[in-house]
Amino acid sequence: MNRFIGYIQVACCCLLLCASCVRDGMDEDCNSYVRFVYDYNLEYIDLFHKQATKMNLYVFDEKGVFVTELEERGCVKTLAQPLLYFT
Image 1: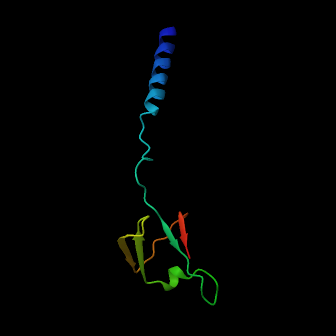
Image 2 (image 1 turned 135 degrees about the vertical axis):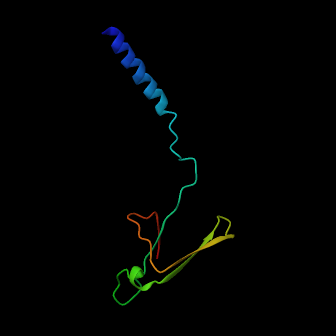
Image 3 (image 1 turned 90 degrees about the horizontal axis):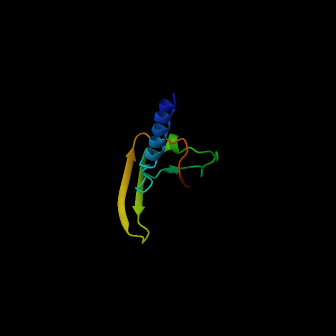
């Protein structure tokens, strides 16, 4: 019985040591999300998803240099909890 408990203890220690080897990916660049709100209208509600058919997003780096342009047509992708808000 003591030998079995010893094996269990060694297995638990190995699992705890391996937990530090898990790569969480926090050191890599992650995707950013942008949410557009169009409430500058007579109804004062967000009508972006109903009225926008095309969207261009211009991306600049921290020095103000143009990096890329992203374009979406037709449907607008919605997010549950976006990270950035632009109005």
